[in-house]
Length: 340
Image (cartoon, rainbow, N blue to C red):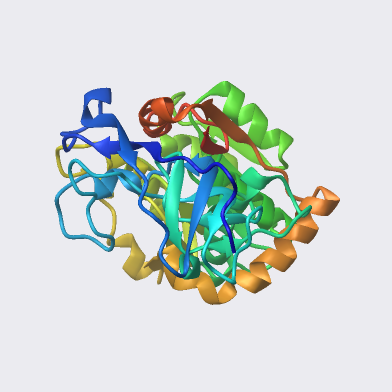
């Protein structure tokens, strides 16, 4: 396929200038202009519309062995993005197609065709394919139903519940017949939003100890499932309140991502023995076999209003580092995106 008449010769991207120590700062990032290479057979040029910033990216900024390779210094970061194909040397993607791929943090991306997925037209706004209909939604769906093995009638506690994943978890639990869904968040406005989204109870973790507030919200019934986005004090509290046979889906630990010291909590892990708890960590990459099932159900839930989603959108690639730093500080409600 022939490219459009005018494709850019260069583009802007965000490089990792230095590795953060503790909380990232703007100086850890650099805005760079690079020349775009010629397309090879089987590649497409994508003009990105939105890019995602996600908590897991903080771990990749450290030079440490992990489940995902560290970002390289003085090179572009990467992550989820959605955009329009503006030039193509692939039969799989035509000029004008909208695709999801993993070369975010840049305004244009040269993407191997096999690494780009076409977005169905008219199903939802483009940005939703980075959130409710994308990795975020699949994380919530598979984490709750497959990892935590949610059952109808369970009481579910979600930490970081006003974030992109947490807000989806709570609504999916309600849609699947949870007896009660409890969420924690970091401000009165976020607590109010959780109640609007159908959570049965929600609390601001800044108001009082998490354990005290969780016990009050759960009452004598306790909780059966804990979806953990936070770790630390939240995980310790959940272990104390979980019922015998309770299950924990360990998705994230944002409370300690910027910490330079080992976390003190949970200090009560031994209760997992007597309560016969299951604590299971997971990565969304290991749940892709559920993607088709997820998309079918989520599309229906979005269409009939069973599930709603929030987005916090920051304008401009140059503001992507600030969006990421703000995400780690809890400034977002729902999915944090950068419009390019």
